[in-house]
Image 1 (cartoon, helix red, strand yellow):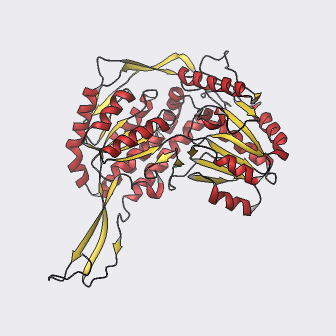
Image 2 (image 1 turned 90 degrees about the vertical axis):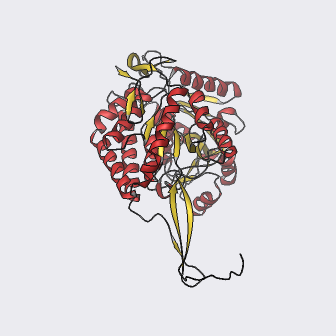
Image 3 (image 1 turned 30 degrees about the horizontal axis):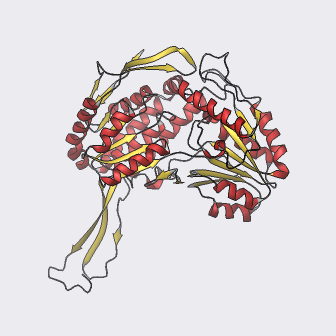
Length: 489
């Protein structure tokens, strides 16, 4: 059994008082993975102080040298992927295949960011004045706070920590207390890679207590958050009041539009993997299937035939395609939404029940048909393996249904009509569009994020990964050696 630990100023520590924490396998509640105490304000204060003390020396380190540390951490992570995948499955519940995918994504992101440390970080801009050099550079914010969720406890921290460090910031990292042990393993890797004391600090505690403290501390100059829209908007508002940068990746209610000219088998495969892979517990999961009426019966039958064969169980077991819900509280929330869907008048076609002969938080993959856009199950994020089918008469009605949402993270269309495909690319109100493929997935070198209530602030990852974590400075170098008369200032 592991202890739930903090990492502050280069030292691992265990609080000896406060609120207790126990980490159990969501697939087998008899397996206790770790326990301990949650950090409080005292610990987060020390962590901020450690980050502040290390800030100047870390920012002064040449950027390529910072990149070497990140690259080393990526290599260590890759070398341990087998053990890490098994542990990640035991703590979060996802299948080993999904865990491996998460770790590979983390590795790719860290490798990409390390390489960015050897690329130019600014631009040389032509000046309209003679003998005048104008250029831009990027400089670190200072101390930044990173607040991450439980559903990707390695990949999401990795794609925040790596660019934060690469840009020259020091970090206070607060992971979800649902999956603190995987987060600690990632920090151990950065420590082993040579990250100096105080540069990366880990505190495991209550989001309300620690989050509020991080929001209010004047030494925190940026906050990157992934989680619910409710918490993200609160964080963004609080940061705006202090003129502090904020980056919030929030909820999703991701649609797939299937037109009658689509490859229906391809669409069914994509919808099922997008809706029920990772137990539907990802912000890009498919939760709405908007289908033309003339093919809706066929599509529903194809979806049912696939999920009826899915194997649900402990993600460590061979052949398992869907693991448990992460916690009892989340399971109850999913069950509540299933009841809401039934009461609203939707047709429960498949699933909807808890699997009681398994020793964890298991529920069947669940499919609703004849869902109307106004229903709560079509509007609110469920964050579980629940898919709603919305029937439409034509493409225009389908596009309207796709956009009938407060969220705008990812969307997908299945069609062989290039005119409608490219129209969808322009008019779908989402930050990421997929053509003839699921709503989930992404690549390390590609920006990630949404619009509307799904995201605010700079995009994460890819070519924009370092934008949030740095300020742009413009430099004018006049090498005439004499005073000029300006025409406009």
